[in-house]
Length: 123
Image (cartoon, rainbow, N blue to C red; front, side, top):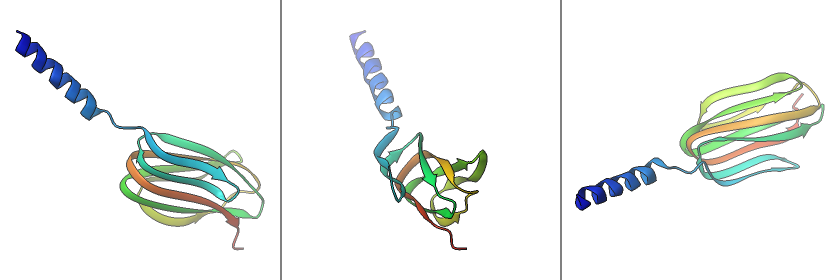
């Protein structure tokens, strides 16, 4: 009986430990140049806001070593960009003018680096 209870306890603990994965391990921060993320684990949504001027756009650089991310950028009451299952990408997102833009990055088993940089429009 004790052996069965001990075995059950060991399997329960192993299942709990193996089933747990960290939500976020890394750094995510906003600077005057943009939103920067560097992480070894991302299994949730991280969000930030950037204030953009009329003549600015966003340069997105996603470099993942594992998993994928979904990215949503909204501002001025409209969706500026939505992308799913992104892994290694570099592109530019135009904006609809000055204002606050919300950036949401949802990761699934993701590790790597994301840079969302403010820059003057190329017009």
